[in-house]
Image 1 (cartoon, rainbow, N blue to C red):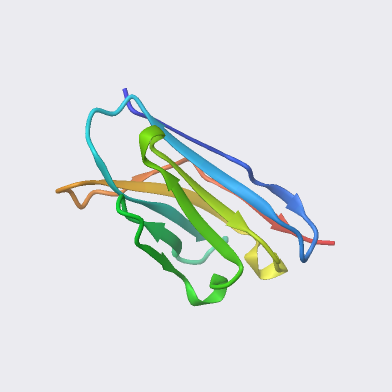
Image 2: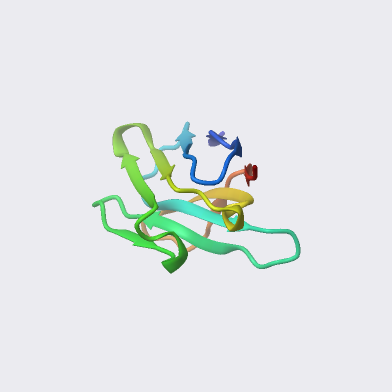
Length: 117
């Protein structure tokens, strides 16, 4: 059975950094897109960043220049380096992935990121 494990969330002060990671294991299919959404209570889930297998990236305007997404294809792992964090970045961050030739989004369980002094 496919497993998706997220890690790296936590509490950080404004201006600080965190790095999220997400690994998909036990899959026999090739993953196309991987990335992160975030959802604050009562709001919709919004895209933070995504990366294709070939390395093409996409970022929300609010995180450009502060967050960097990267990927290890051999290990089906995606990373989100978050720098210069702001209180408005506080949210639950959800990893996701989509297989080649499919449109279904597979979600992680979510990891809490809290930016507060």
